Amino acid sequence: MSEEPIIQLPDTSSWGTPDWGIKVMPKDSKGIVMRDCLIGRAGEVPDVAPKNTGVAQRGSVVDPNTPDFGFPIRDKNLVWADNMADLYEQAKAGQWDATTDIPWDDLPELPDDLEQAVCQIMTFLIQNEYLAMYLPAKFMHQIDPQFTEVVLFLATQVMDEARHAEVFTKRALANGGGLQYVSAAEEWSVRSLLSQDDYSNGSFLMHVLGEGTFMELLMFLEDISPDPVTAKTFKLARQDEGRHVGYGISHFSYHIEQDPSIKDQLLAAAEERTMFLQQASGSSPFVLKAMMTLAGGGSHPEQLAKGRDRVRELYEEMHKKRVRGLVSIGFERKTAERISELHGSGVQNFM
Image (cartoon, rainbow, N blue to C red; front, side, top):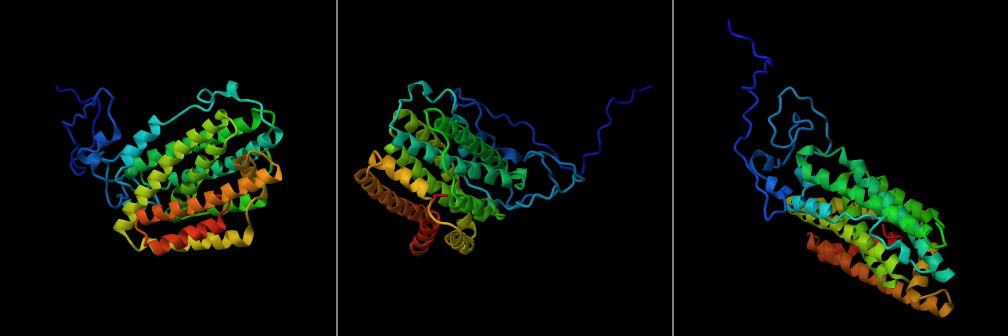
């Protein structure tokens, strides 16, 4: 008498057949990277994610009776970039520790006006970091995991921004100052972006315009920092922001190439946000004075005048680089100039 099998497997004849015989080998003793895993069915990124794959990893053989999870973002165009696997690996390699990688013991005592300016800038930056943390988190669960590299990359961005909020908070509290003023103008600016419900619009306004401009701001702040410890907080955060902008540029280059009509939608999104901000807010005098103080080396009138000139030069450079970035992803130069001018006039608080 034959024994019954311990486990009775279901009939999978209608499911399809799994891959077999795949062997991804580590390269150069550096382990297996995500790009190496773009092989077999796991490497077949669908143009539109199927409705019956749930949260199964791409390439799995899935029971046809799997329920539709209802992920709203299922089109590859909406999220993809051809270098997604590489961006994710770069994000992992670029992680740093806000506790141990900043030489806090070397922080020098600063004149009160410079310390207050640093603390005011840190207070402002923290607001922007919460925005940049919450917005991708808002969309992550909407993206079908068939686009796994995108979901994993956005998870690293959330961690990056959390670390930035941490390091800027620590710097504001570390040297005899403390957290400073927050204006309604800044809060309206953040709210207008966090309220975006369309991924393309939100990603464009944040990854391309907001973080592109923010990266230039961090470079400027690193240059005018009154001490090397403060400068390092800006440098490390800027390196992370470069990856986020890299995703935005790569993604929208891909999206615009696949669907040029998206450019009209993105222009409209920039116009709508700028119109709102011009009615609801303006530049924060606290932030502008703090930038002028650091750029001029102090708060005396002649120092503030020098700082004002440097800040004006920063705005001009931001505009030029925004235009170059927009042209590189497929916008005509006239439209790129228009979008950059909109962003510059409506979002003087940088995000």
